[in-house]
Image 1 (cartoon, protein in one colour):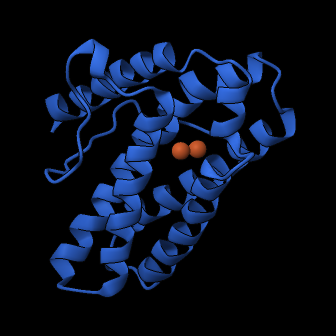
Image 2: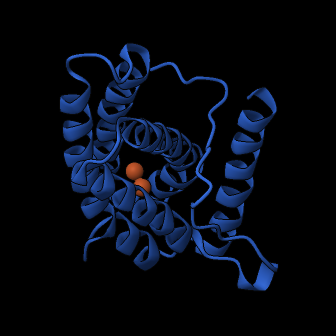
Length: 174
Ligand SMILES: [Fe+2]
Ligand SMILES: [Fe+2]
């Protein structure tokens, strides 16, 4: 699947995890903080609200998920794969990402006025909730990565840098 060259994160209320190197989050806490943020936005979206707030939330969800799936695919998943921890789990996660990206692309290209906008957002929320569970649960991808001895501190640093780069690109273009 084609990736857009630049992705943006326009969320001003987004939890941020910058700081001194020693206090920076490891890969798992960094990825989990994205999950938490996106789930909160989905909950707010589902509660309803003004059309403009819902559009803004959909945009933030899509932008954050584009960056999140991309840094996982570029950094975390390859490390998980290379460590030979669980091939099937890795492949399933990649396929779920592909499905999420198809939905995101449809949400973005057809826009919030489209008849299927709400349906797409609902299915995306369900897919992401399932995917997050598979990453975070006991015996999930994150637990296996930790047990498998991946250097989560180092990966956290790489993820953080790449996320900043991608978000920086987005800001420059917007
Ligand atoms: Fe994730
Ligand atoms: Fe993922």
